Amino acid sequence: MLHTYCRKLLFLGLLALIALCSSCGSKKAIGKQEKQKELKRKGLVFEHQELSKKKAEEAANKAIPKDLPTYGYAIRNKALYDFIKDWEGTPHRMGGNTQKGVDCSGLVCQLYTEVYQNPFHARRAQDMFKETEPLSIEELQEGDLVFFKINGRRIDHIGVYLHNHKFVHTSASKGVMVSSLEQAYFKQRFYKGGRKKS
Image (tube, rainbow, N blue to C red; front, side, top):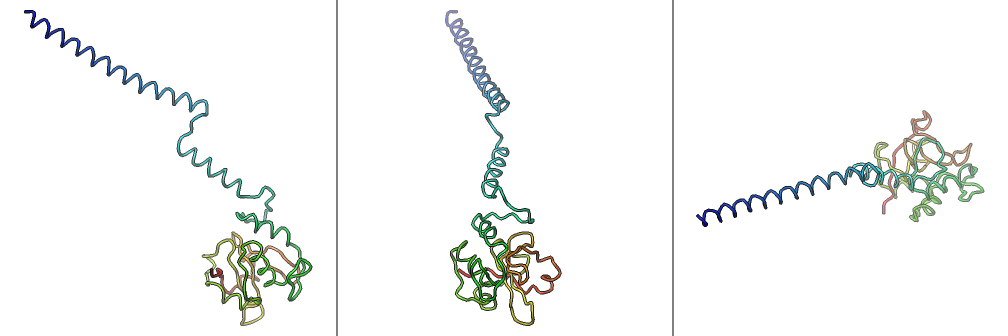
């Protein structure tokens, strides 16, 4: 009889121990969930997606200069943006390569030297084309080149592509400016894009 009593007592003790352990575990899990909800409510914890989005926005805002002009392009390279800002309005001068006067290939040579530290060996637009990998208009990215045949069969005009069909170049009448490949004049005379070979 004592033996049966001991077995019952041991069995009841074991049941009590199991109940105690399971209730502690659930309390711990519930407590953790409540804590997460409380922290989230206070703005101290973000969902993974929200955090990634916030980081992406912060990185984008740092990359875009605050005084970016509204030409319809978003330049990510600040050195390129600064170059355009400094040179915009420089008058056209055949053979020129300074801010007193510059032609289209002179502008590109200066831009590639100052912004990309990757100068061209050639000086004329048609020779510069030989230093590039040809691209279609759909493949163009910021910093690629755009080549035109303005007066005939040979390449005689060049610019640097930005975004949204915009490019910077030297106009014979207006000097250094930003234009669009969508303009009828350039659309009709566009030859090819080019990416400078390494």
